[in-house]
Image (cartoon, rainbow, N blue to C red; front, side):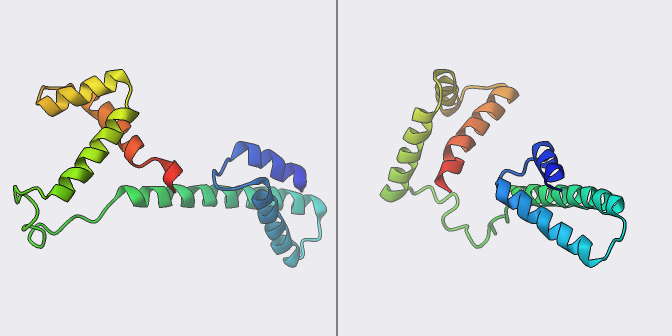
Amino acid sequence: MKPIVMKLMKQIRIRTWKIEDYLQEGMIILHLLLEEQSDDGQKLHTKFKVKYHQRLIDELRRSYAKKRSHDHFIGLDVYECSDWINSGDTSPDNEVVFNHLLAEVYEGLSAHYQELLLRQMRGEELTRMERYRLREKIKAILFSEDEE
């Protein structure tokens, strides 16, 4: 069954899994199939291939679902936060944090995107695609995966 596992491992890549994870999952599925007592070896081979393939697809879908769950956030209750939303007052610590994040974002951008950011901050009109690309670059810098 190991060749099946290795072939499907190359076809269906799950980012968080290593080779050992694929092999272990294969052993679990083989164990479950053997418990069902399939007498025919060829049927066992086919059942294993199908069941293992389905398991990998399920795990891949589950990982995508987890990723999508982070894209949706629970909104703020405007009435509860009305005292600090739009208060107009900026405390020194908020300014320090903002300036630090702005400097970090600016350093992480290429020269083209730095210019777009400056244009945006001056209030100049950007095209829809320029705004989208700039926003994606900024999100990539602020929420980079190396911090996890």
